[in-house]
Length: 443
Ligand code: ADP
Image (cartoon, rainbow, N blue to C red):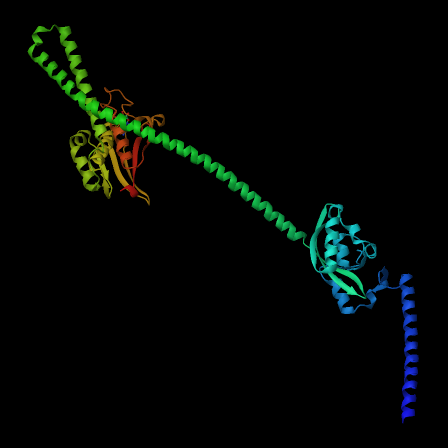
């Protein structure tokens, strides 16, 4: 048994060694044939000399499914040697950088990289041999066409040679969107800066005009004070002048010749006019002074105005139509004066021989109440629309239409007091409509 056992292993070892030897010879032959075929360009592979000797890289030896995936996927795939020689690249990568596959395989990848990005590539390749690294490179596959490729490097170790695998993704569209976003942001920032600058300028202007308004307001208040005091104080000497004119006329009329009597008459007339104007000024400066807003039924108020003007209405044969009026919180006496001025003007400035037809109406809107007094009178030329609201501005001589040119200035002041607006719409020879608003938020 011992002998048998001793022979069997010997025989077995020899035979096994012989078989192994044959097998090795066979493989060596195959390898040599493969190498020869590769050298002759008959096989899809290349031979690379590295520190560990010659190395064959053959795609034909790869598993078919992986190869199909590598060829069909949307990313570029490359295997490069540790020195940067392209051992393999799929068609997608060759399309991406616009270089034929046969020109790529076996060439140095760095030779396809732009001069300015070469050192970045070297750094990333060096890092990619040790672990993962990534970076973006710019290629120009065609004239007027730039491509941004994102390279992910990772080490691949086969047979002791340190290859590096690179996955290349085309991020040109992403870059485009990123650039558009950056541009849009820059644009927005510019717009914001521009608006801010304009707003600052407007704010500055507003502050300055506000200061001017405050200053103007102070002047106006002082002026109103002066008007109020002087018109009030002027009444006393005016009364004295009138009294003495009266005394002179009554007691000394016999002592005057005709000329002196006519002078006295002129002085008397002038004093009367002056008295009227001073009173009007005093009335104006009293508007809104000392009175408070009250809840007023404007139906009643307008009815009272019409009743006050009854003799004027009867004499002129005026026909007045009034729509439903609201209940409002207003300076009642002033609003009374406002309607009184507008209605009496509508009667006064009627066309000769035509009975005045006047309509008074109110209209509610979200923010305010609008009131209108319209007539079919002589009308006003457009050029005078603003002028008539200024104190003492009259469009007709006293002999034609009596007045002092203060009524509409008062109307404006009353509307201003209520923070509203007053304006006129008119056609010369056809009639006028005086409109004014009273905002609801100040009611
Ligand atoms: P007065 O009535 O005392 O002249 P107002 O200030 O009331 O002063 O009016 C100023 C001027 O506006 C009037 O002289 C007149 O020329 C014009 N005016 C005012 N109301 C009317 C109107 N309803 N139709 C035509 N003109 C008008």
